[in-house]
Amino acid sequence: MAGEPSFRKGLGALGGALTLKAFSAGTVAAIFGCTGPALIIISAADSGHLSGGQTVAWLMSVYILGALISLVMALRYRQPITGAYSIPGAAILVGALGTVNFNEAVGAFIMSGFVILALGLSGVIGRIMRWLPMPIVMAMIAGALIRFGTGAVDAVGNAPAVAGSAVLAYLLAARLLRSVPPVLAALVVGLVAALAFGMLQPADVPLAFTGPELTAPAFTLNGFLAISLPLSLLIIGAENAQATGVLMAEGYRPPVNAMTIISGIGGILAGIFGGHNANIAGPMTAICSSEEAGDDKEKRFGATIVNAVLFGVFGLVAGAAVPFVLALPKPLIMVVGGLAMISVLLLAFQQAFSRQLGHQTGAFVALVVAMSNMTLFGISAPFWALVFGVLVSLILERPASASGEGQSTAATGTH
Image 1: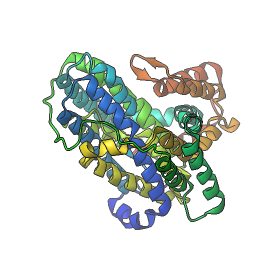
Image 2: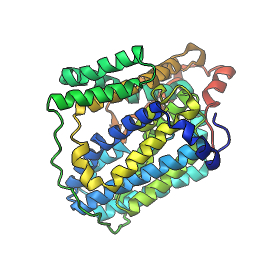
Image 3: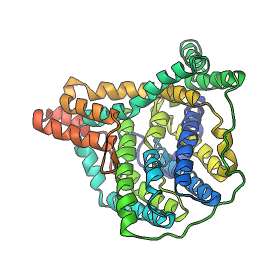
Image 4: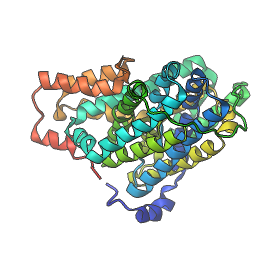
């Protein structure tokens, strides 16, 4: 969609891509990525009894490398392909670090990166994504991201003054103010309301001004089976698949193999510095590729650049920044994130249940599995949504027409 990959063309187009909407969406994506997910990493580090220096090194590695991935992919492909790290991957480490020592975990992080890199170089992930029916992929996206919508509703119920003010600001801005991105209006008004109601309270996180501390890796079979294997599957089956799906839904041709390769390189480098992986991120890509990032799809990569800068700054000052970023009330984060996902969810549902593309039953199975909290063999629901959706479709449904199949596969690039 954006032409041949070229850093020169990306840099040349960057000025026009840094619009007010791009700043708005990129900031929302960064706030989402630097709040609750950071707390999950801190919780995992606490369960593994890591030192403050090891925890800061973990945060620095995933945020700085996530920022670099965003810069490389956005400028080269001129698409809003956004880097961060695996949030569910950090969540499984909360339990895993109770039984695996951190030296083994660091070795497992590095091995996971090599597994993902090998799969990317083989081209197998690109072939799988081209083969998967579009409705099933879109249903998985809808199911995986619907929690942003329900989370926004819960936020209004839990904090009606703050979250409700943000929703009202969004609606009024969308209706009356063409020059102001609705999500930005929601964020600003929500922050003012949170301040007025005394809901901005810095978190008590003992990391301030602690320097990073590197950890020597230990490569063991136990670490590979307990951490490397499930982490690799999460990144490919959840993060990269979600990011690929939302980009396809928005009409882009995502470079699937390149996205896998750079996620593998990010995993190796993050592991060396004590982080669990830096990779293409589903939720952040969804926010940066949505209509909230701009009306012109060719310019939405500017939101990823903004997100990258904020992620990089956060990573550089992680020890001092975490308490202040975590001061933002969770209801405000949830409601703004949900508002930013509206257009993505609408597109996903429309493409998942289009009669012309077929695979309706398989898409429904993928939707409900992705909406669930099911975990099998340490692998979370989005991966199984694709597996079960395809199996049900193969058993119960006729193959889509040639025109339908063409629509389901044409959107995926393999650079």
